[in-house]
Length: 80
Image (tube, rainbow, N blue to C red; front, side, top):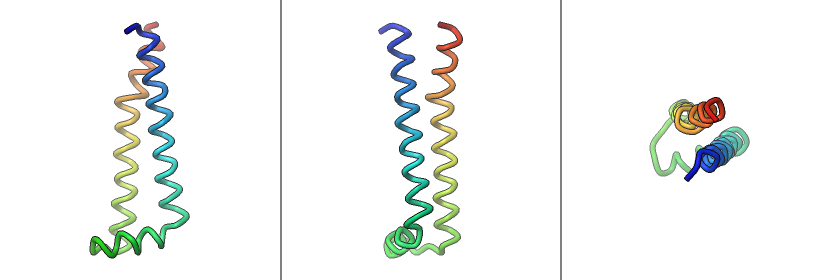
């Protein structure tokens, strides 16, 4: 496996993960009440707890994508 293959894999991983993050955000913003009713039936949470959980999850996911996908991609672009 050469560096170009790893670079391409990291780039596509970053794009796919940001796509997942955008879909998560869209589902958090637009059908917010529907999702809260769905999850609220399974887990007893207040709307504030649901919002905090979703925003915290998105923040952690974004940080992990940056650390494990974007930064290695940028480093390989600089080196190669």
